[in-house]
Structure formats: C-alpha cells, structure tokens
Length: 379
Image 1: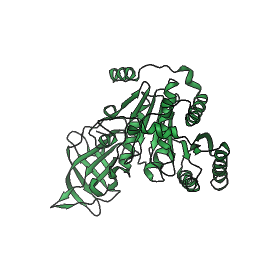
Image 2 (image 1 turned 60 degrees about the horizontal axis):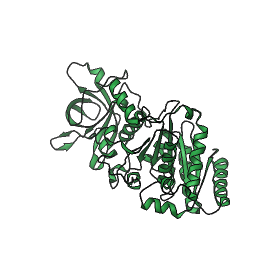
Image 3 (image 1 turned 30 degrees about the vertical axis):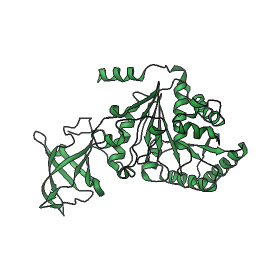
Image 4 (image 1 turned 90 degrees about the vertical axis):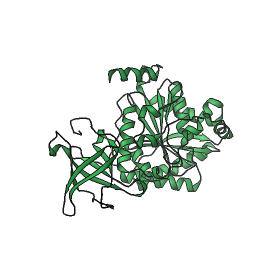
C-alpha cells in the first residue's frame, strides 16, 4: 500500500478496487478500475464509479477509504484532488500520508544538471537548441538525455531520424516503463521521446505532470545533464516543467512579435514562481551581432524594470541556411556542418555551460548502458 514511509503500491493498472465514501453529498460503497498509478507521489487514478448506469461525480476534496484485506482503514484513506474530463474522464486520488502539492519540484543531485529549453512562440528554434546542446555536451563527455516534453507536437525524434517504438504516451498510460522508451542517439546522448498528434496530451493533468516529474527524477541515476524540451507558449504544461527545473534557456528571435511572446512567457514564470528561477536568454536567427545585443537589451531592461527579475544572457545564433539543411537531413547542425555560423553560436553556448560546471573534469565517457545494468543489479 502507499505510505509516506516509502512503502510500495500493491495495485496495478486494470485492477478493480472497492472504496467507501462518507460525505454530505455521497455515501456508499463503490467499485472502479485503476487507470494510473504514481507510487512516488501517493497518487492513483481511477475511472469514475457508476451506479445504475450513471456516473458518480465525487467532488474534489472528498475523502474515500479503499477497502483492502489485511490493512486498517486509516492506512487506505485518499482525497480526491482532481476530476479529469473528456475522453480520459477519471478521478485522481492522493493518499493522506502525502502532502497535496500541485507542482512537484525536481531536485538534481549536486553533480547533475537539469536544463529546460523554452520559448514564447513556436518556430523560435527551441528544439534545434536542445538537440545541438545535447550533442555538444556529449562531446564534452557529459552523459546527456533530451526529455521531449513538447507533448502533442513532439519532434525531437523526427529531427534526429529516430523511430522509437514507444513514447511518453505509453508511459503516461502505464503501458511501458521509462527504460522501455529511452532511445540512444549516439554514445552519451539519449532521448526520451514525446508523442505527436495526441491532443489529449497537450494539457497534462496534475496526476500526469507529477508522473512525468517523478520519471525525470529517476534519470539523474544515469545522466549528467537532462535537457527538457518544453512546448512553446504559456500553458501550465509548459510553465510547470520550467518552474520545476528552476530555469534554463529562454530562446527568442529579434522579430517584435517574438519578443512580445517571450516577455509574456517570462512574466508568467516570474509571477508563478515560488523559488528562485534562473533563465538565460538565447537570441536566434540574427543577421548582426548588434541585432542580438539590442534584442537582449530590450528584454533584460523590461524584465528588470517591470518584473524585478534579472534575465541572464547565454549568447546568440546567426541565421544560417545550414540549420535548415541539417533539419532536412535529420542531423544536428554541429554534426553536419561544425564550422557553420550557426554551429559556432551553438558551440559557444555549450562551451559557456561547460565552463560553469566545476565538476566536468571528473566526468568519464563510460557506457550509460553499463551504468543502467549496474543499477539494475543493485535493485
């Protein structure tokens, strides 16, 4: 059963559970099917119970007691924390031993790094930055993983010419585990593929976000750097990942509408933050160095004056047709054309990251699969 002391869960997806409800609106004993489980957060997702062909719409905040032989009732008490609508209609329950927290923060170990790559609008070059940053860091002997959190429009696998059999949709549905979907790109560079064309995953529920956050936390056992490629815009699915990782790279282009959208995302993040957030600006598709500087100056000034926030500056990337050629050939531009203007900008951003990481000299290019096998043996 669940428990704040780390006990595991005895249920699995597809199991039928029986639970009792005592509230001002509903009383009785109901049966439902388990459709999702997140033991680390004390969460269980069940279908809406039905009585005589009608849904029992238990309100958020209702306490339920799941009946399980051999366990006293206090250990099986849950609270309804969310009602999921649409095709995925279900209830999300949280065990009373666990604190109800709408945003699970990610906490990398001291020798690990977590980077989110975000943008206010689509087409700014967010995924290109994530891929080439991972490629460059892998060359520095960092064991890197791109977590494609651009759900519904994920394309990291497409731009890297991968054909993964499973993706995050299978993970959320409970059909596959994290190691089933982890895909190798090259030595020291892996991808957790997202999924495209699945509208239901464009807005994650609290349960689904917490599930993915707990899976990302597992990746620190295997990788030095995890790069989260988020969706564009200011939806909760995007901002939750950025805030949970405490920042990363904010990419924009010099166009006025891109700057406006970037500021809107920054304002949303600063308003919602509950702990320090470190964001560094990257200006993409510039023709002149002065253009990049002017764009950065505008956003840094606005952030400082109106948001009381110090926005960092990581660098810029020249507009370069080689990037399009690399995308067409489904390769990182750093691999296809290392000397291209865009490659020089991307390399400079990676080098700056490398210089700030004091523990880089202790890294070794050992096999990630070897590390996974060793951890599996200890489990």
